[in-house]
Image 1: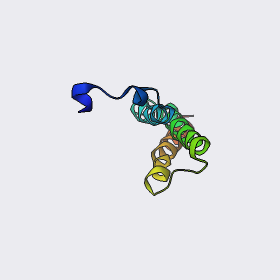
Image 2: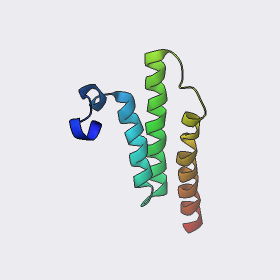
Image 3: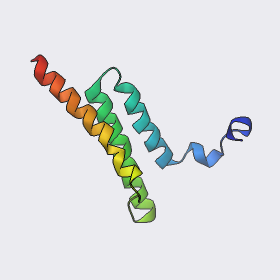
Length: 87
């Protein structure tokens, strides 16, 4: 339905959704540059956590959201190791 009718207008300006899209954009950047992509990804999921805490006075629950930090941390570690190895 969202494809045929378009997404709701509120969905387009939801800061938490934008934060998750930044996280996914970081994954795409990481194909070219591990360190920058990892930092962008961590900034996106970190801002999601901050915005969620501001809105609901609690961090997101469940196991899925904390696992979203793992790819960003691994990308940053890979980027740092690659820089260290090349110097």
